[in-house]
Image (cartoon, rainbow, N blue to C red; front, side):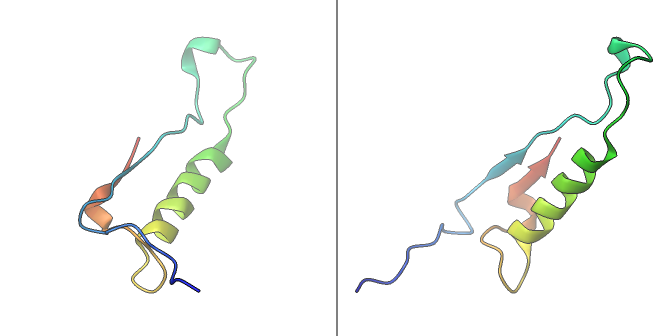
Length: 62
């Protein structure tokens, strides 16, 4: 059985995009703070020294 292949941390990139606030939508559309929290948690998981597959500078959040 072959070993699993993981991304090369030096060459791999991730762009994490999410929107938790929509000011143009007016007061009828409430903020969704969980979106920001999920992006933060995903970046931490991807760049974790123990289990991550990316270097911190290669996982940009927007």
